[in-house]
Length: 262
Image 1 (cartoon, rainbow, N blue to C red):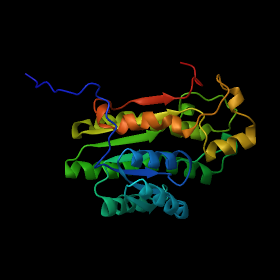
Image 2: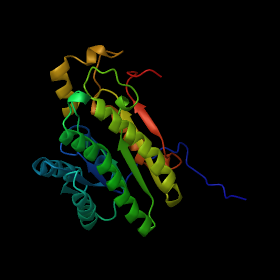
Image 3: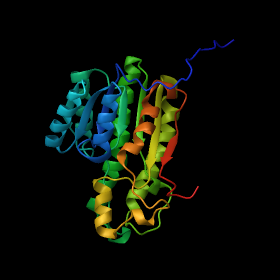
């Protein structure tokens, strides 16, 4: 008979003490917030992005929270840099047990006008890069016989698209991330590696600011007439990386303030 485990009441710990997190796209917006949130919950954090000057500033902030932090230069389109980034994080902090695939770029060009260079940049950054990075982290966890958590950033645009934002390929890439989450969860569940995703709606970020400058007040078009704040994703992120969600894998959580039809 399978042994029954016992759990405290409520089983809702978000204590990340002893965990090492790697957050991509950490130089601004959601990634910056995610890195600080994980550190505040007890994790040591490797912050990765192309803008290293911003990462150094963020590392100082995180160290002020009492956690170790290392800035990691990373261009998600460069496979060699992806491998090197994981090695840098592990050399400084230990095995990466939490990965947040946050880095992404928008297209902002109609599909029939999109140059090949932009097609490659969007797909390499938003799909190929997260796939390669997830595999690199998982490969090391499996070899070390350690459990882990991977959280991918999809988008509500991966589920619906009205054509107003000129985000065709971005939408395709975020749908791909959702499916990637589901299949990698199946691949790695036997190793104790949980793979989940967050699909945010309209949330304040550099990308959103660019859309607002092109399209006007996007918040006014939403049911609650507002744009979300990155802080409103904290609880979902912490849930998906915390001990108490160990029974959850292959799930995409929509956090969109009712912006998409159910």
